[in-house]
Length: 283
Image (cartoon, rainbow, N blue to C red; front, side, top):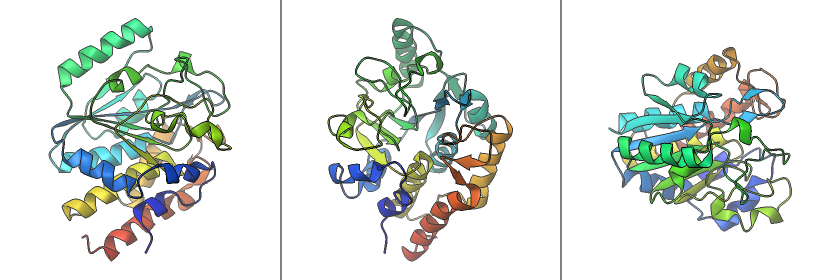
């Protein structure tokens, strides 16, 4: 029987699975336990601007919402954090949870906003899903090495020094990948230089949304209740944000795809994760 980690690393197109040896075998399980040990308020950051497409991508927000729904059902107060380029997409599918817009501004102003946000919402845990992270030079680089700093709020300042956090990524340049920044440059097709922003736990997956679904699946097995969205619900989330202008991060066009996978291809992961829950007798 495949593990959750096996499933979310299926169909790997960027060589992200090469990093698996550097993480605990049950990295989704470890992140799940961390979250469940820190009930209360969670800030979930997401949103990745695609320079060539002139808009934010479809990877990230659906996973953030799936995880937010899961944590809402467990009694967490959920807030989403993004910038102006992804806010319309996240807000449209947020299901009543507040979306905090982190401004795109100077480092000093960003630090101040991060401090004020943490003071105001007092989160027990931070989670990032497909959110570009700082390089060592405090830049934001896409997979091709081009800067997207002008289009990317410095949400890293929420995570720097925060004691309890989870990062989810699929390429090496996302918040959380700082945990493996020393090894990422040694692997082909991963972002180099990588992000240096660390999180307490890191989840890698072939598509970042899938990492979020894997996390929900692991949480479901621990609490003994199926909390994962259906494939139809996921398709609805993707279609909704595409209808508002979100683009596929691989083809750079406004189409119903996530990282190059069409809706049918993408749904295979949700289907496999539900099958895993069935085999684990989680209803």
